Each structure stands twice: as structure tokens, then as C-alpha cells.
Length: 82
Image 1: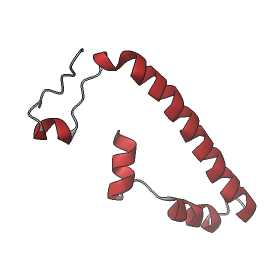
Image 2 (image 1 turned 90 degrees about the vertical axis):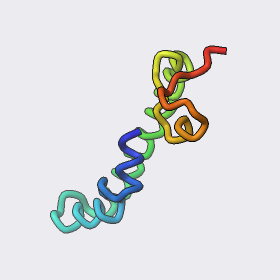
Image 3 (image 1 turned 180 degrees about the horizontal axis):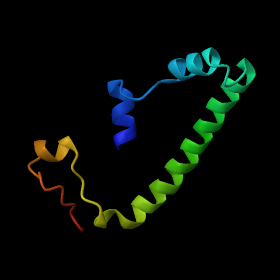
Image 4 (image 1 turned 90 degrees about the horizontal axis):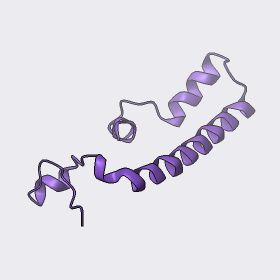
């Protein structure tokens, strides 16, 4: 949950900034920059699937402190076991 939040608020570097850095420091060539990004998105997709499966299995053990719980009157983030 922290990663997407940082990305959306600008604390985490986005693809254009990383691509500029890779190009400026000659860390990767132009062809490799896009391949590295594609590999990162693939890892992100696989991690999302794996963590989603784990969350579905053990969601009752994880408190949910999302803002929607404050709106509906459940600030402790306790899920209904039903």
C-alpha cells in the first residue's frame, strides 16, 4: 500500500524520470531501458497476483485502515468475519 501511495504523491520516481536517469548516466542503452521497464511491470504483475492470493486467503488477519472505514464508522479497521 505504501508504494502506490508514494508513486501517486510524487515521492517515488516515475518511468520518465528513471528513463532519463538511465540514459543520462549511461546505465542502460535506449533498447534496454524499455526492456527493464517491461520486466519491472512483469514482476509487479506477478507480485500482485501472488500477494492478492495470499490476501484472499488470510484477509481476516490483516487490519484494514483505509479511509473508507473512517467514513462508514469502522476506524479500527476490523473486518466482518461473516
